[in-house]
Image (tube, rainbow, N blue to C red; front, top):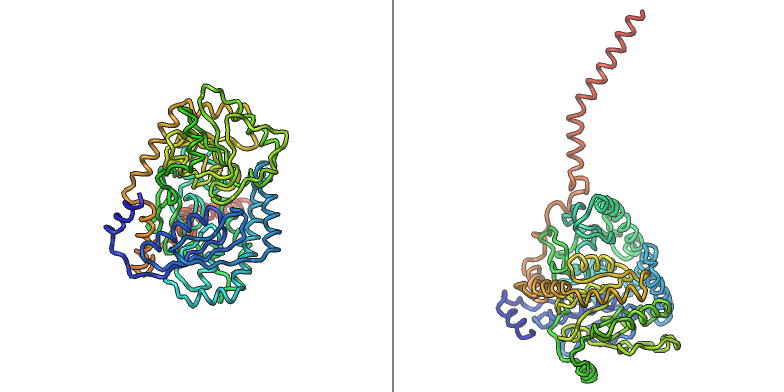
Length: 534
């Protein structure tokens, strides 16, 4: 696959003279893995790439951010042991709340409050900012999930490309055509086929979305005011979003609901997908010993390994134990973050009274891509992260989603609507529901058939996602920016964009004479009555 990729790359548009590119990763976790892949691919293309990486983020606890040998450069920034310890403690408590089904806007705004505090400290690091300014980058590729990345790009005075690690309905203010009749609003947990009540809910969420965006930006406004010479942008987060030369999304229409796009958007979902390699010897031996028996891959993210929510763990284990022998599967359970390539399972948190069923193996880490690509993989039980689902699509493995927080609920709605799998809310998990759902997904051939169809769609795109992104980045560099991709409507106020000013004008023109006539007639009738009285 790698040879084919670079052969294709050489046949594409001529490589530009090496550009200086800064990639910005201030969160970590799967965000880091995506930006690491982007940075490496751009370096392989011949560009001079440096990543600014913030260390100490608990999203991917224990990961070694050593970078890649003979690849891009890296500058790391760290806030200090004391703050990171306190922050990790707070984040651990939030994970417990997620598993108990308590994911809400208040928790998210608290998270953004921490991110804005970190942003203030980073932008106040004169040594780091001066170093980045003197490097004079040609373009910045930033993590568009974090508003701080946009503020940083403005402070550096560098044009930027926004890479969003999720689906199209995440960033509200990039002004994509989004009719609420069939395009679900973020967090609505709706599909693109809505009944009248679904459309009513979607409309309601569309009114709430700008309020949510303003609340998010309010946590960063003071930071922007302190660190930008021009102060906080008058248009807030919307102005920062619309200043991007290009928006690249970690999604693909094999999984995404079809919708209109704009010239400044490109879909590059599947950057982490690779052909499977043989697993390491111990896992390969375990799989070989299964004979014709298949296996189920279970990974629910760092949440389950970092905290102890014993009732949930008991139901999961009991549910796995109830799978009948005639189903012919075994469980390979990794209770750590899907993307955490160096984490370890905290065995001390495993309840001493809870036996491990005979039909599953508990591991501290598993090579997800290689196992999903194994011919004996029958099912993938996942928390519904975007990268997880894209890898399931790539390898044509049906999924059982147990979403925990954020966009994972919307992601699983897409997967379920497409026919890739089924979903169980973590608060609704019982051993009976879990066991019966697993049996349905394995025994009903329609799920595997749909997974194969989605995989063909994903793989048959004429340009691989990594090369697609590289070509667009080079197009922006070669053309001097993305102004030619942005329609004039982005500069218009929202009421002009939706023709509300025209509606008001037409209302005045059409209704004005009616109102005047009615007022005149009423006044005349009043005078006539007055004359008759006298």
